[in-house]
Image (cartoon, rainbow, N blue to C red; front, side, top):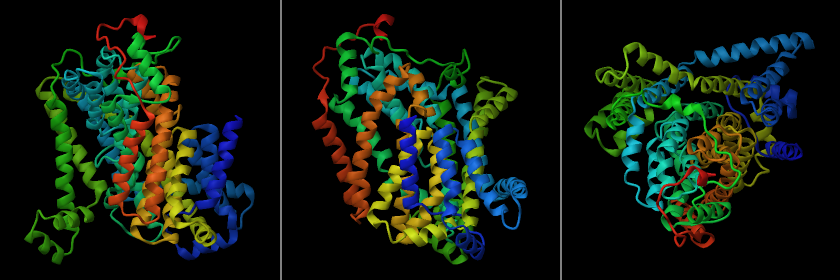
Length: 579
């Protein structure tokens, strides 16, 4: 409890050092509230953050954060009782207003629809078929780890599906190669949220696009959220470097810290987990298991996902083309497949609509394939699709509350107040680093990257814009929010993906957390020292990214100890040796 309180205090200090707000209403109303409430305007986001630490429940924390803001607004000319009533009614208005927006509705629909598509593909055995076909190629510890990494990259569309599909498929292969369960869990976990968070199409994209769009609206800029999202990818240092870190350790067969001891134990003794360990197993994996008795085919994954991706790219082009001016449409038609044509059409497209349409088309194709192969009836297909959508309902709830929180703090004038007192006090080059660290702390303590993004994004872009209106600087700051949230979530023992990775690999959860944390902290340190600080100082990304990658490789080379020399006996691993 003491550690938790210290962390909360540190978070409060950091929040006071860097926050701002989003959502633009009447500037005069926002300015009047900023002048009236002053420092109290930071109460809603602060309440949401502190409660997230204490309760570990992001939905409850966001709700009370929103209410604290609407209560303050409701105090205007009212007594406390009426302020409570008015505050509650304002929450309803905020949620309804968020849901009635066509962009927001499209975002929620595409998230739910992609969830349904994932369930169909899994039930048809497509994901398992791809995994098993690749697993047959694993002939050594290096190839087994690289194939696990490749599978994680292929299941880019959802972090939950990644953890629950890749783990059970690769576990027997990893066991045969005497790869510790801790290392298997790390590879699975490090290719779950990190790849889903930067994938061009995934269950994460809609949420990230929504936060970006609303935050930019707060500074009076109407931007193409998908275009900004793509621009943040080079600044997502942790996501990129942790994926490469896995490759470096696998190819060099070098480990350090607790992971070295785990790999040494597994290679020398055949014990895939330490004595007394309690492997996690769960019935949740059965939800993604293919229907019993069907013939597995990789095409049951390749075709639906391929249709999703292909439809999305065609949709981006067509939808964006229709949104262009007649003059620009004529210019595009002169060279329809040029880089400029693609940039202009994709940039003008409405990603919320396009991704929803693409996911719906992919789902229809998946259902048709399943019906033709007699894997399920139409009724069963629809039930499976709806079941997959249910898994992402919580995302919609968080989205609505995050939008509402952003709307409230914007109406309170939080941005105007904080930018006025802080824009000249924070060194420009340090803001992305501060954002990354703050996001890491919050997501580690709460176990949720979604909630962290929802709280910080509307508080970051206005301040970054006030410090420096350069597009690259604001984009870098947005990227720091997204990747910092993923890093903290990756380390957290209460994170859902950390838990699911332990389940998928049948690893002791505490051992997975203990061994993974050293690696995650190492890569985070590299992300700051070789990524955000030099990038904040204005060093070109063509220099920053290669240097960061080289630093990651050299860290493994010099800190790592070789596990090549340990005797590798590839016989059967008995259950006794597992624990």
